Length: 235
Ligand code: SF4
Ligand code: SF4
Image (cartoon, rainbow, N blue to C red; front, top):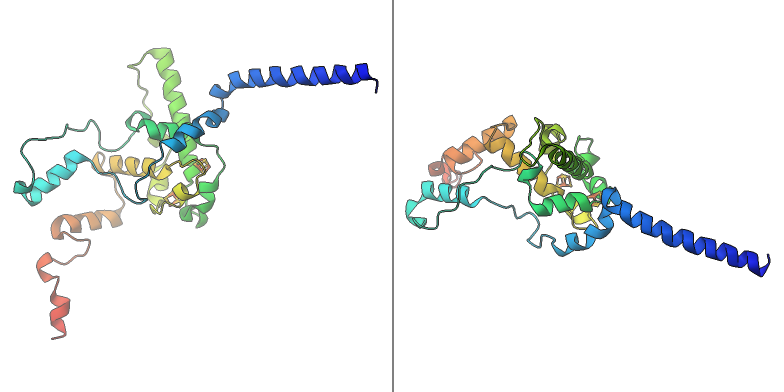
Protein backbone atom coordinates (compact mmCIF):
# COMPACT_ATOMS: atom_id res chain seq x y z
CA UNK A 1 0.00 0.00 0.00
CA UNK A 2 1.03 3.56 -0.54
CA UNK A 3 1.79 5.79 2.43
CA UNK A 4 -1.33 7.86 1.66
CA UNK A 5 -3.59 4.76 1.81
CA UNK A 6 -2.04 3.61 5.06
CA UNK A 7 -2.48 7.06 6.58
CA UNK A 8 -6.13 7.11 5.45
CA UNK A 9 -6.81 3.71 7.04
CA UNK A 10 -5.04 4.73 10.23
CA UNK A 11 -7.11 7.95 10.47
CA UNK A 12 -10.34 6.11 9.76
CA UNK A 13 -9.62 3.46 12.45
CA UNK A 14 -8.57 6.11 14.96
CA UNK A 15 -11.79 8.14 14.56
CA UNK A 16 -13.96 5.04 14.33
CA UNK A 17 -12.50 3.85 17.62
CA UNK A 18 -12.77 7.12 19.54
CA UNK A 19 -16.33 7.93 18.33
CA UNK A 20 -17.39 4.34 18.99
CA UNK A 21 -16.09 4.52 22.57
CA UNK A 22 -17.87 7.85 23.20
CA UNK A 23 -21.16 6.44 21.91
CA UNK A 24 -20.69 3.26 23.96
CA UNK A 25 -20.10 5.29 27.13
CA UNK A 26 -23.55 6.85 26.68
CA UNK A 27 -25.09 3.44 26.18
CA UNK A 28 -23.42 1.86 29.25
CA UNK A 29 -25.71 3.30 31.99
CA UNK A 30 -28.78 1.88 30.21
CA UNK A 31 -27.32 -1.54 29.58
CA UNK A 32 -26.13 -4.56 31.54
CA UNK A 33 -22.58 -3.23 31.04
CA UNK A 34 -23.27 -0.75 33.85
CA UNK A 35 -21.47 -3.25 36.06
CA UNK A 36 -18.20 -1.94 34.63
CA UNK A 37 -18.66 1.22 36.73
CA UNK A 38 -20.48 -0.29 39.70
CA UNK A 39 -18.03 -3.13 40.34
CA UNK A 40 -15.57 -0.83 42.10
CA UNK A 41 -17.96 0.76 44.63
CA UNK A 42 -19.67 -2.58 45.08
CA UNK A 43 -16.43 -4.24 46.15
CA UNK A 44 -15.57 -1.23 48.34
CA UNK A 45 -18.89 -1.58 50.21
CA UNK A 46 -18.61 -5.37 50.54
CA UNK A 47 -20.00 -7.04 53.62
CA UNK A 48 -16.94 -7.71 55.78
CA UNK A 49 -18.82 -9.54 58.51
CA UNK A 50 -18.04 -13.22 58.95
CA UNK A 51 -19.88 -15.20 56.29
CA UNK A 52 -22.91 -16.91 57.82
CA UNK A 53 -23.55 -14.17 60.35
CA UNK A 54 -27.16 -13.27 59.72
CA UNK A 55 -28.66 -9.88 60.34
CA UNK A 56 -31.31 -9.65 63.01
CA UNK A 57 -34.05 -7.12 63.59
CA UNK A 58 -33.46 -5.07 66.73
CA UNK A 59 -37.12 -4.70 67.55
CA UNK A 60 -37.74 -8.46 67.27
CA UNK A 61 -34.65 -9.30 69.32
CA UNK A 62 -35.87 -6.93 72.00
CA UNK A 63 -39.29 -8.60 72.12
CA UNK A 64 -37.70 -12.03 72.49
CA UNK A 65 -35.42 -10.79 75.27
CA UNK A 66 -38.41 -9.24 77.01
CA UNK A 67 -40.20 -12.58 76.93
CA UNK A 68 -37.18 -14.46 78.30
CA UNK A 69 -36.06 -11.98 80.92
CA UNK A 70 -37.75 -8.56 81.15
CA UNK A 71 -35.04 -7.29 83.50
CA UNK A 72 -32.34 -7.71 80.84
CA UNK A 73 -33.85 -5.08 78.54
CA UNK A 74 -33.60 -1.38 79.39
CA UNK A 75 -36.97 0.38 79.35
CA UNK A 76 -35.49 3.23 77.34
CA UNK A 77 -33.72 2.66 74.07
CA UNK A 78 -36.78 1.30 72.24
CA UNK A 79 -36.05 0.71 68.54
CA UNK A 80 -38.51 2.02 65.97
CA UNK A 81 -41.16 -0.44 64.82
CA UNK A 82 -40.24 -1.90 61.44
CA UNK A 83 -42.33 -0.96 58.43
CA UNK A 84 -41.90 -4.44 57.07
CA UNK A 85 -40.47 -7.74 58.20
CA UNK A 86 -38.04 -8.90 55.54
CA UNK A 87 -38.46 -8.01 51.88
CA UNK A 88 -41.48 -8.42 49.66
CA UNK A 89 -40.39 -6.12 46.86
CA UNK A 90 -37.34 -4.16 45.75
CA UNK A 91 -38.18 -1.12 47.89
CA UNK A 92 -37.73 -3.31 50.99
CA UNK A 93 -34.16 -4.18 50.00
CA UNK A 94 -31.15 -2.11 51.07
CA UNK A 95 -29.33 0.19 48.67
CA UNK A 96 -26.40 -2.24 48.77
CA UNK A 97 -28.60 -5.14 47.67
CA UNK A 98 -29.89 -3.00 44.80
CA UNK A 99 -26.35 -2.00 43.84
CA UNK A 100 -25.47 -5.71 43.91
CA UNK A 101 -28.17 -6.28 41.31
CA UNK A 102 -26.73 -3.63 39.00
CA UNK A 103 -23.15 -4.82 39.58
CA UNK A 104 -23.81 -8.40 38.49
CA UNK A 105 -21.80 -9.33 35.40
CA UNK A 106 -24.04 -12.38 34.83
CA UNK A 107 -20.93 -14.56 34.74
CA UNK A 108 -22.71 -17.47 36.43
CA UNK A 109 -19.89 -18.45 38.82
CA UNK A 110 -22.32 -18.32 41.73
CA UNK A 111 -24.74 -20.70 40.05
CA UNK A 112 -21.92 -23.08 39.07
CA UNK A 113 -20.86 -23.37 42.70
CA UNK A 114 -24.38 -23.50 44.20
CA UNK A 115 -25.01 -26.97 45.70
CA UNK A 116 -28.76 -26.56 45.30
CA UNK A 117 -28.35 -25.88 41.59
CA UNK A 118 -25.84 -28.71 41.19
CA UNK A 119 -28.30 -31.18 42.66
CA UNK A 120 -31.06 -30.19 40.25
CA UNK A 121 -33.06 -27.77 42.43
CA UNK A 122 -34.74 -24.79 40.85
CA UNK A 123 -32.44 -22.26 42.51
CA UNK A 124 -29.89 -20.14 40.61
CA UNK A 125 -28.28 -17.26 42.54
CA UNK A 126 -27.45 -15.61 39.22
CA UNK A 127 -31.15 -15.57 38.38
CA UNK A 128 -31.91 -14.08 41.82
CA UNK A 129 -29.72 -11.10 40.95
CA UNK A 130 -31.10 -10.75 37.41
CA UNK A 131 -34.69 -10.98 38.68
CA UNK A 132 -34.00 -8.29 41.28
CA UNK A 133 -32.60 -6.00 38.59
CA UNK A 134 -35.49 -6.71 36.21
CA UNK A 135 -38.05 -5.95 38.92
CA UNK A 136 -36.16 -2.79 39.88
CA UNK A 137 -36.22 -1.66 36.26
CA UNK A 138 -39.94 -2.37 36.08
CA UNK A 139 -40.69 -0.41 39.25
CA UNK A 140 -38.46 2.47 38.10
CA UNK A 141 -40.19 2.75 34.73
CA UNK A 142 -43.65 2.60 36.36
CA UNK A 143 -42.66 5.39 38.79
CA UNK A 144 -41.27 7.52 35.94
CA UNK A 145 -44.56 7.15 34.13
CA UNK A 146 -47.09 7.39 36.99
CA UNK A 147 -45.39 9.28 39.83
CA UNK A 148 -43.51 8.27 42.96
CA UNK A 149 -46.58 7.00 44.84
CA UNK A 150 -47.49 4.51 42.14
CA UNK A 151 -47.35 0.80 43.01
CA UNK A 152 -48.42 -2.02 40.75
CA UNK A 153 -49.96 -5.28 41.92
CA UNK A 154 -46.74 -7.22 41.45
CA UNK A 155 -43.78 -7.82 43.73
CA UNK A 156 -40.39 -9.52 43.65
CA UNK A 157 -42.23 -12.73 44.54
CA UNK A 158 -43.68 -12.69 41.01
CA UNK A 159 -40.13 -13.12 39.77
CA UNK A 160 -38.57 -15.32 42.45
CA UNK A 161 -40.68 -18.27 43.51
CA UNK A 162 -41.00 -19.74 46.99
CA UNK A 163 -39.55 -23.00 45.68
CA UNK A 164 -36.35 -21.17 44.71
CA UNK A 165 -36.14 -19.41 48.07
CA UNK A 166 -36.53 -22.58 50.13
CA UNK A 167 -34.06 -24.53 47.97
CA UNK A 168 -31.20 -22.43 49.36
CA UNK A 169 -29.06 -24.10 52.03
CA UNK A 170 -27.50 -20.76 53.19
CA UNK A 171 -24.07 -22.22 52.47
CA UNK A 172 -22.55 -18.95 51.15
CA UNK A 173 -20.81 -20.71 48.23
CA UNK A 174 -22.31 -18.09 45.88
CA UNK A 175 -20.92 -15.16 47.88
CA UNK A 176 -17.49 -16.82 47.97
CA UNK A 177 -17.51 -17.40 44.20
CA UNK A 178 -18.64 -13.94 43.09
CA UNK A 179 -15.79 -11.87 41.62
CA UNK A 180 -17.42 -8.59 42.69
CA UNK A 181 -18.57 -9.65 46.18
CA UNK A 182 -22.28 -9.78 45.44
CA UNK A 183 -24.44 -11.38 48.12
CA UNK A 184 -27.47 -13.19 46.60
CA UNK A 185 -28.02 -14.97 49.91
CA UNK A 186 -28.98 -11.77 51.74
CA UNK A 187 -31.87 -11.21 49.29
CA UNK A 188 -33.00 -14.82 49.70
CA UNK A 189 -32.94 -14.52 53.50
CA UNK A 190 -34.86 -11.24 53.51
CA UNK A 191 -37.53 -12.68 51.24
CA UNK A 192 -37.83 -15.77 53.43
CA UNK A 193 -38.15 -13.52 56.47
CA UNK A 194 -41.07 -11.77 54.78
CA UNK A 195 -42.74 -15.08 53.91
CA UNK A 196 -42.43 -16.39 57.46
CA UNK A 197 -43.12 -13.27 59.49
CA UNK A 198 -45.80 -11.58 57.39
CA UNK A 199 -47.46 -14.34 55.41
CA UNK A 200 -46.80 -17.28 57.77
CA UNK A 201 -45.73 -19.30 54.75
CA UNK A 202 -43.15 -21.82 55.78
CA UNK A 203 -42.36 -25.40 54.70
CA UNK A 204 -43.88 -28.00 56.99
CA UNK A 205 -40.51 -29.34 58.15
CA UNK A 206 -39.46 -25.89 59.32
CA UNK A 207 -42.82 -25.16 60.95
CA UNK A 208 -42.27 -28.18 63.19
CA UNK A 209 -38.80 -26.96 64.14
CA UNK A 210 -40.06 -23.43 64.87
CA UNK A 211 -42.78 -24.77 67.14
CA UNK A 212 -40.26 -26.84 69.08
CA UNK A 213 -37.92 -23.88 69.50
CA UNK A 214 -40.84 -21.81 70.72
CA UNK A 215 -42.04 -24.45 73.17
CA UNK A 216 -38.84 -26.22 74.20
CA UNK A 217 -36.13 -23.66 73.50
CA UNK A 218 -34.45 -26.17 71.15
CA UNK A 219 -35.21 -27.80 67.77
CA UNK A 220 -35.82 -31.20 69.42
CA UNK A 221 -39.12 -32.45 70.72
CA UNK A 222 -38.01 -32.86 74.35
CA UNK A 223 -38.76 -30.44 77.16
CA UNK A 224 -35.78 -28.54 78.58
CA UNK A 225 -36.24 -30.35 81.92
CA UNK A 226 -35.66 -33.72 80.17
CA UNK A 227 -32.43 -32.76 78.46
CA UNK A 228 -30.08 -34.57 80.83
CA UNK A 229 -32.06 -37.79 80.84
CA UNK A 230 -29.69 -39.32 78.31
CA UNK A 231 -26.92 -39.05 80.90
CA UNK A 232 -29.00 -40.51 83.69
CA UNK A 233 -30.05 -43.56 81.69
CA UNK A 234 -26.58 -45.12 81.85
CA UNK A 235 -26.23 -44.77 85.62
S1 SF4 B 1 -26.17 -19.74 49.78
FE1 SF4 B 1 -27.98 -20.59 48.70
S2 SF4 B 1 -27.91 -19.65 46.66
FE2 SF4 B 1 -25.87 -19.39 47.59
S3 SF4 B 1 -24.67 -21.15 46.85
FE3 SF4 B 1 -25.55 -21.72 48.84
S4 SF4 B 1 -27.47 -22.77 48.33
FE4 SF4 B 1 -26.85 -21.65 46.50
S1 SF4 C 1 -20.91 -14.68 40.44
FE1 SF4 C 1 -21.51 -12.56 41.00
S2 SF4 C 1 -21.28 -11.40 39.07
FE2 SF4 C 1 -21.31 -13.59 38.51
S3 SF4 C 1 -23.49 -14.03 38.03
FE3 SF4 C 1 -23.15 -14.53 40.22
S4 SF4 C 1 -23.73 -12.67 41.34
FE4 SF4 C 1 -23.44 -12.07 39.18
